[in-house]
Image (cartoon, rainbow, N blue to C red; front, side, top):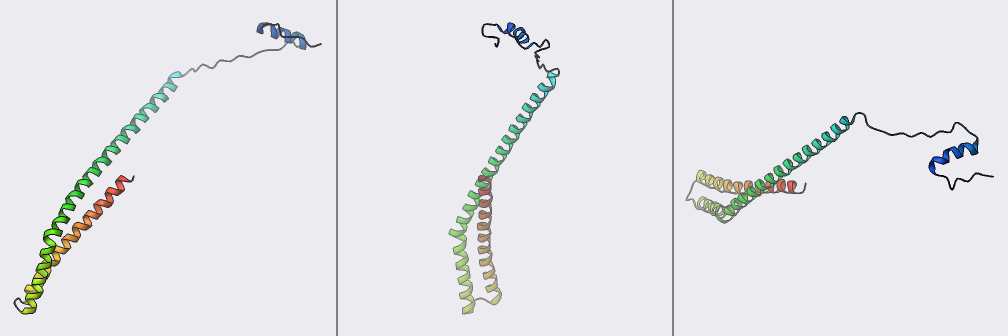
Amino acid sequence: MAPSFENLTPLQILPAIEEATGNRFTGVQLGLSIPIFFNAHLAKIKAAKIHKQENEAMLEAVTNNTQTEIQTFLEKLQTQLQNIEQYRTNALPQATLLLKQSQRGFQEGEIGYIEYVQGLNRALTIETKYLDFVNQYNQTLIKTEQLTTK
């Protein structure tokens, strides 16, 4: 017949098991883990917190730098757009007029070849500057879009 352990307290169970099995050398092992070098663990925690603060500060610096660059590029875009509009409304019509007058004057014999070439050169210089402004505007726009899509 098997022994009944139902009515025994936990302290009475072990001797009852020994009695039932006939084993005198039954034992229980109890362990407790206590860190001896607790300061090393605290140092790792502190280092991790400092590393986190450094990363947050770096992120904030990069964010501020990027926002400053975007603002600078937006201001450049505004200035370049004003230059382009200035050329469209004033300089390009003058260049077209200068080109037509140079061609007409040369064809009618009013001006010589050198004056004709100088007139063409001035008109083409104005158109080239306009195209340079358009190119600068497009390059700045590309850089701005690259910064805003990161």
